[in-house]
Length: 198
Image (cartoon, rainbow, N blue to C red):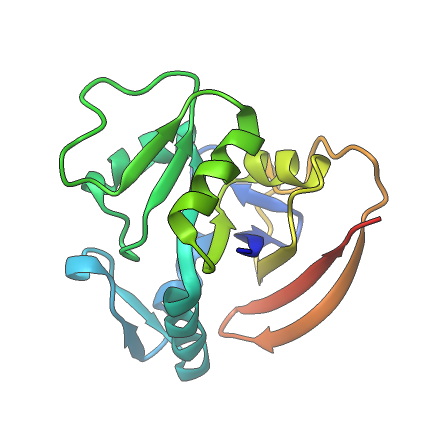
């Protein structure tokens, strides 16, 4: 069965987005290196350290689908129908946006069943590959529902002071995590954890 993981770039003070800066500061590490990382049609230019580039290429190979919320979909303008990493996307939303779904798009919408419904759709699309949850709110919902297997954090050397927190509204805490790896980067430390389930 597919592994469900969540990944976000997060500031030292726990934020994944700022009200005016958005994710610009947090995503800076994607362009601080010398090694280019390919994206679909080179729509996004990524240049990281050699080690980070190798890790991103491995992630692209193992990734089956990404699950996002409607806010991320809107902010990304639907990725023009195809995510830069070339994998299918499941968007959990109350209503399907006007003009969607689009022919030839790899974006799928789930309007019922909450996070459980979104992950069920993701499992159909991912097969044995990894399912990545790419929003703070959905990560919190998956943790609260006991549906998250792994958690990876790109801990950025910055403090935002305000914005959207990665780990708000958690229920059933404390959660126990087992650290599986640590990898230093350029202005960022990459952390991997396994979620210990009761």
